[in-house]
Image (cartoon, rainbow, N blue to C red; front, side, top):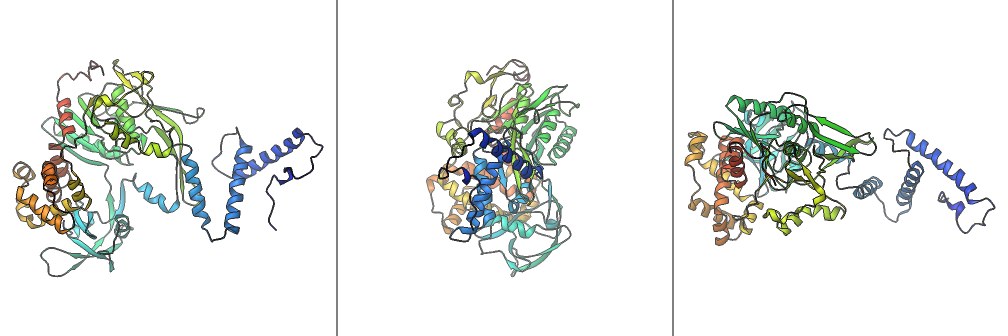
Length: 560
C-alpha cells in the first residue's frame, strides 16, 4: 500500500474538526521539532536553530520524492546521480562558489591543491591522437629511465594509448599510481626503426606551484606563482631566498592566471612583504562563528625594496587577497587588469560517502574594508559570462571602460583612492594585446601544431642546441621565415588551410611561442618563461615600474 503524504490528515477533503487552528498547529510543530532533532542529531554538521521545522520539512519532502521516483518511475533510474544533481542545483541558488563534489570527482578536485603526487614525472601533450613527451621532469623517474622530448607513447602496460582517442585525464590515470610500482611504456623514438619498451618506477613527484624564479638583471627578480597549494609558501620562501643570495633588491611577483587556493598560504606570503603588525585580510560570516582577522606578525624576507605584483582577470580568490593587502598598505604597485572578483570563503565538508560539500561561510575583505566579490545577483549563468561581458564592453583594452560607484570608494594607508565591489583594480592598467592574434593562429594552437613543430625541431637539432648555453641560444636564435613556412605547410597537411594574411599577422607571436617551446625542451621551464617574458607587454610595464626610483605608489603619492 502506498503511504499517504505526512500532511494528508489536514487536506480539504476531510471534515473540518472542532479544534482551533492553533491547537492543531502546536502538536504539529512540536512533532516537526522533535523529528528535526532525531534527523539532525546524528549529523555532525548542525544548522542554525532559527528554523529547525523548515529544515525537517524540506528533508522529508526530498526523501519522499526521491523514494517515489526510485520505486514508481516508469524507467529505472540511478537515485544517487539524481540526488547529486538535485544537490548541485540547490547550491546554485546560494552563490556561484558553493559546490557539491561527488565522491568520484573529489580526489581529482583535491589534487589541484596538493604539492606532490605519485607518478613518473613527465610533461606530455596529445598530437594527432598520439601522446607525445614534451619534457621529463628534472631528476624524476621518467628522466632517470631515459625518456626524451619527442618520444611518442604507444602503449602503457601493454594497453594501446595511441590512436584510440585517449583524453589527458585518462592518460594521467594510467601514468600515475602508488610509488614503488612499475609501469612499462612502449615508445616510438625518432631515429629508431621500431618501438622500444621502457620500464619506469613511479615515485613521489613534486607538483610545483611556483612555476619559475629567476633574476631578470643583477637586481631584479621574477617569481611566478600559479596557485596557492599546500607547499606554495615553502616553495616561495626557498625561491625568494635563492634570489636574495643572487643580489635581489627588487621583485616582480606574477599572479596572472592564479585562481587561488589555500588562504593561509597567501596571507603568509603577504607577511613576508608587510612589516609590523598590520591587518592582511578579515572575513565576515553569519554571526561571529566564521569572523576572523589576520595580521602580519613575523619579520618578513622582503619588507623593504621595490615590489610589483602582476594581476589580470584570471587572478582570483587568495591571489586577490594577497594583491589587495599589498595595495591597501601601499607596499606594491599592481600592474595589469582588474582581477576576477572572487571573495567568498568556502569551508570543505567531507560527507559520509566520500563526496565533499564546499559551502560559502563568509566573505573576504581587504584591510581597507573592500569586498573582493563581484555581484552574482543575475544568477549563475550571468555570473559565468562576466569575463565575456568585460571583453565585449572593452574593459580588457581601455581603462576608462571601467566604472566604480562612489559608494565603493576606499582609501589606502597613504590615502590613495581604491575601489571595492568586484575584484582588485591595478594601479597601472595594461590592455590585453591582441594585435598579433588571428583565427589562423587560434587554429594552429587548438590543433597543437605549434608545440608539435617545436618538439620536432628540438629532436632534429638536439646536438646543436645542447652545445649552446641558454644565454647563447637566447641571444642568437631566431625563428626564420622559412621555418614559419614549414609550420604552415605542415598545418595544411593536417587540415588547417593556408592563410597568408593570418600567418603574417601572427608572425611575431609565433616566433616567440616557437622559440619559448624549443627552449622548454632544450633548457627547461625557466628558459621557457624567460623567452616569453622578453616580448610580453605587461612584463615590460612591470619591469619599468619596479625599476623606477622613489616609486610614487610606494610613497603614497600616486592618486588614482
